[in-house]
Image 1 (cartoon, rainbow, N blue to C red):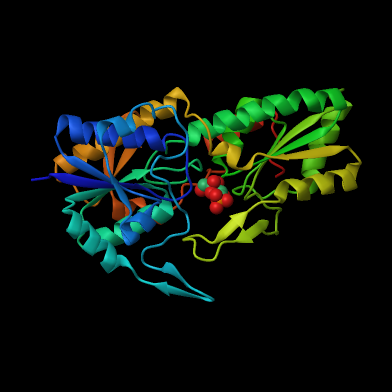
Image 2: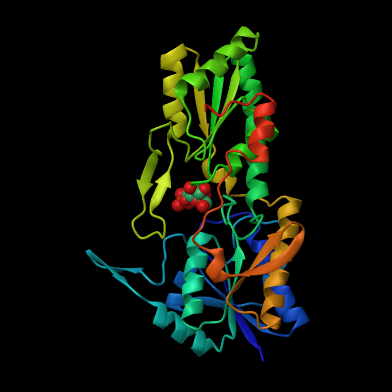
Length: 361
Ligand code: F6P
């Protein structure tokens, strides 16, 4: 018999986290009469026992709010947890401490909302016998076990809005405007916002580009009397035979590599090779912040309700997943570790090419 569940949000934040929390709390408390304990700042709250006992009023008015009322972290791995000791740093496996805390609170199941890193730890807790269910979150949309992660569509919306704005200034100044977007090792945000925003060039990690081909596209447009071009670059894009551009290494993060800087690299090369004035906008964390669009509010609510239903059916060690238009569930074992990247011969790349987009290939 379930009486009390725990919930946490882990990894980079993303629009829709609060909508999931609201759905989890309302369904668990309102429909099943369970108590809900929220752990603060991702796994850190579970390790350090920092938590809140949810009341219904805590989740009122948060459906449309970006971020997460619980806080999050993409640095705290409970199996390799950073402990600062004055001048030195130590890494320790704190998973047993987490299990003690779960036991102490009398928690029957944990809802873990996160991306690949957070859900990999959820799987590892499931392997240790902890009852968990996962909810797939990330603006990158790179989880292979679900058709869509919540937050992605809002990020695409934000990026498309930025492209629309860059269009008018590019046209006025007869410039190339480059927009660098997030997405880590997957080009989904660049591809979808690029198509929606009418980009002329889209560069994604899955299709290594050649600078000469990028420049040819810009020159071809000039010859056709179009004296500006829009280039959307995914942060993980790379030149044929080249490497991704790394902006920093975050030591204790499950994935320590932070990408960034490719936009400036491409801009410098365009100016050097064909002398067309080029400017760069790096959209950065604007893609992660702010209000979720209605689509993501609904998807997040569906995920939150589905996670609680899984618990009521005692289906533990699973992640809720969207397949087509159906809400379903997959085992956490199958849900993590393999990224969903853009198929270079997929339909979206094909339609983009049909309407004249260059991928620099
Ligand atoms: O995974 C989400 C994401 O926003 C990526 O698109 C990006 O590469 C990374 O997180 C940025 O991480 P941070 O918030 O640590 O800068």
